[in-house]
Image (tube, rainbow, N blue to C red):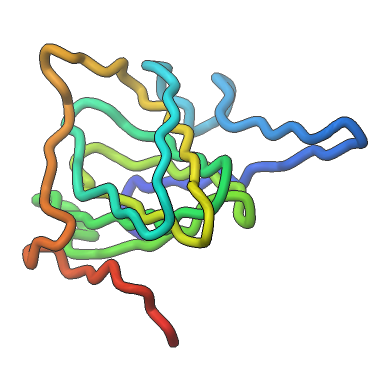
Length: 151
């Protein structure tokens, strides 16, 4: 696994009224700080990526549908430089994925419905100076193919 990437399995607590799932608590060992909470969606097959952050750490939780989240470590001096990780997040695998600084990441909605992702980044979004550095999702500099793997 890419250095400094962290996973937290999430527990769904169902009862006859519905269900509850905690995502991130201030007393979790992986909690850093709170910047904001936002939701993003993607339609089936849509790819959002690549991008990375220099200041903010992302905490992704798929809350509806399923996502394939892919990370690529292009950090200089990282012991896992060049490594690619795939994670499947969503209703069938309730997990929080923490993405460290400077690690390229993106996701693809998989399945047949719009997928919803909750992000709890460590920093609020700055409209005047966004901490978001985009890279084309099909760039040859990242050794990853977003196509469906039918093995």
